[in-house]
Amino acid sequence: MAGLSPIHHKKLEKFAKSVGCRFERQEGSHCVYWRADQLRPVIIPKYKRVPVFIIRNILRQLNISVEEYLRILQDT
Image (cartoon, rainbow, N blue to C red; front, side, top):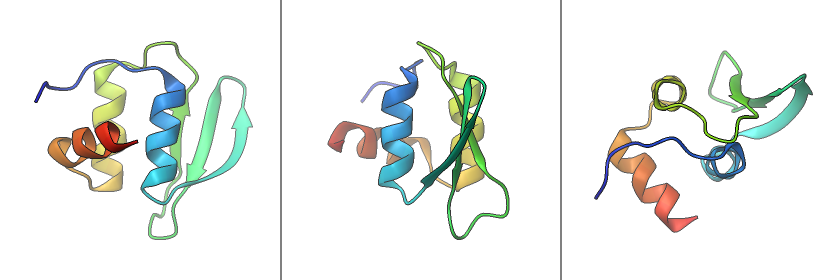
């Protein structure tokens, strides 16, 4: 299984929805997602290639491991 790599924002948004986040609003080039068990929103920038450090921050915020992320990403 490969490691983390930059992905398109639409694929990352699809991942966020699959783990229970719901789209709240868009501010400029950033989409704001909320999940019921989170105190802070998940911000996904509308980049063609979302950098790995942003993906890692989102995973840390959602308390999801890299392995679980890759598995979910492969299933969606």
